[in-house]
Length: 316
Image 1 (cartoon, rainbow, N blue to C red):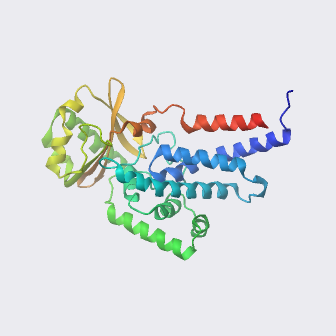
Image 2: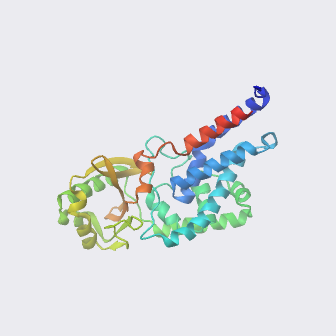
Image 3: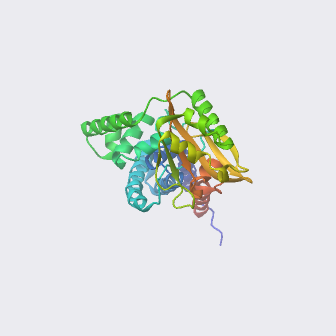
């Protein structure tokens, strides 16, 4: 016997879907900045959707507060367990780059805390410190709102944000503008492809460092490479650049390079640069981390979420 779904419940779920879709991008933005992983952020957003489905929504005073709080707390939990998992990671761990060409701020009111180099700095903070900094600096939440989301006192939150901000300022150098960043990265790639070590050294600062995230991939440096001369020599690896095709992309709010061979992504590269030159190179070789910036991840959480919402509607 076929039973038609209840119009009231269907309408209520349609409204829940509409509210969630409206806030999905900033939710992903919060989770991604706290975790530095698009995959983990997608999983967090999927879990928040399930919680929103099951919530007593008529009793929720502020849907955005409910969703943001759930996202933040879940992301902190994942970050705490991720810290343990990353202790066994082979070589440097780098955040997962994401394509920001269509959504430059990943739904944030301000674009802070999305650059790969800054996400790496945030990784050195505790998950709670990271969450407080992200909510304040990237999304402009008030201290009272953050305190409620983290279940902490307002004075304590102010101290946490101040401490995190100070740590970020201590770790970062003043960056060049977007045009100069792209020029330096373009010149670096051109010199590396032709084996021009002298030109590479001229682009690098004396204390330049190159970090490669390969999680054990053969031929990928498992320790940071330090110093202008060593970084330059490493960067002209002929076998890597042979028949490679660099593609400039917008990733994490700035210029990056996806290196392909025969159409297959080999690596992602970006840099941190000051007026003195490039001081940090970030290479991502781990295949699982290239999907979000190359568009090769199939469907992802969006398909799972859509399927879940359709199933919920069908169940009535």
